[in-house]
Amino acid sequence: MDIKNAQKDVDNWIKEHGVRYFNELTNMAQLTEEVGEVARIIARRYGEQSEKESDKDKDLGEELSDVMFVVLCLANQTGIDLQEAFDKKMEKKTKRDHNRHHNNEKLK
Image (cartoon, helix red, strand yellow):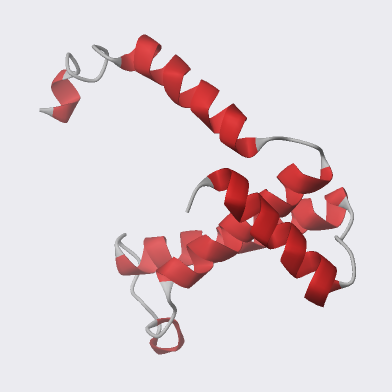
């Protein structure tokens, strides 16, 4: 899956099943909620908090996919080509950070 096609898939789904996009502010609130669900799983499953019985069946992949879905919605409705933006970001990070992390004593 590439990002461009994922954006198209989300747009098609919205048109076929979702009636319309929620407005940008609603989607931002949705994104915050979904990131919170990811944080809860990470904190309890991999962090120091104990995992509640009700959280043990939570699927981290599903929650990360929820985050991605809302991000793709926001990109679509604001006219962002997320594939292009991501490719630029990777190029920038590669140039900027190539040696930075290799020389970080904290990572050794």
